[in-house]
Length: 83
Image (cartoon, rainbow, N blue to C red; front, side, top):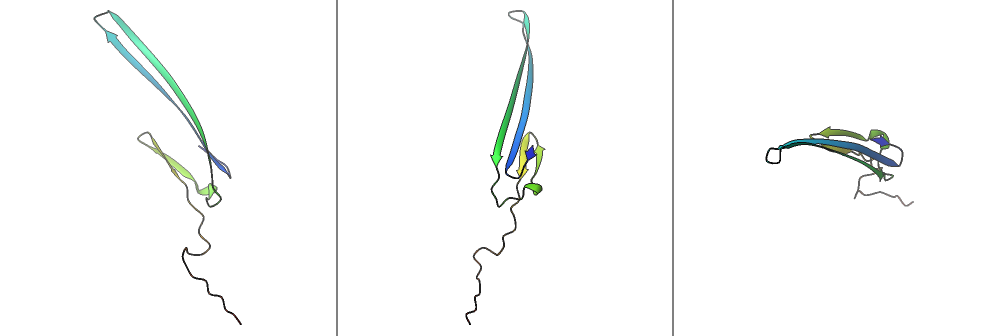
């Protein structure tokens, strides 16, 4: 995974090998497959690119994307004094 100021780029590859035997037709086979992928995901302005982390658990990639702290609480009130 690579992170820039405006994107997260994720790439990976997977290879599999399957071996088997067919005794009725008297042969042994060996199959291999290979897959690769690449994704580029844009990062909104409210995200902190330097704080993005990821971890792999049981074949599942979890990406943590923290937001910047809001400048004031959502739904809060602002007091304006009129002189």
